[in-house]
Image (tube, rainbow, N blue to C red; front, side, top):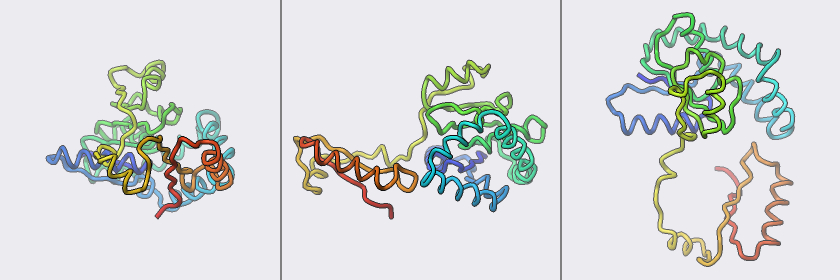
Length: 238
């Protein structure tokens, strides 16, 4: 039974969807590891990330970089070992054969439990970043599989003494919605777009994007200086 952690929610949902559709013989369950271990901590860290990304992106960048080494990295690893104790209750109850993790913290907890011989399940870590971060590699000796976005990431993992046979370049998981095919001419007609011009899909990244003023300035520049382009702008989320 694969057990999935949804730290990076969309990647986890996409994997869950694919396995559920194509491997119906498996008993599959998706679990938010951080919510299970400590919902207050999960809410606090999510709120802190949201505010930092929106109002002080440089702060989030500093935290991201500092968490790779030094006191902050050590504190993170120690905290995950403590939280792994509660996670162990769940794993003993579910008895998974395979644990698929899309977040470094859940990978750390599971690899720690495996190192302590508390669990025997295979561990597959889906690195949902386009560049490696040291937190993904904590407990690497007890992680059975790594799935990465590109060859450069694989080379980096191999340079950290991870067997190349454990690392697979698959890209970051995407929803099957991106595989659907549409009639381009019908879409152009529906939105009153010209076939001769190139189209740009423009959006600012939602609440974690560039910020309102910078998004508007980029959009304004595209309108003023790109006469041969058509811009389809996503204005807001649901």
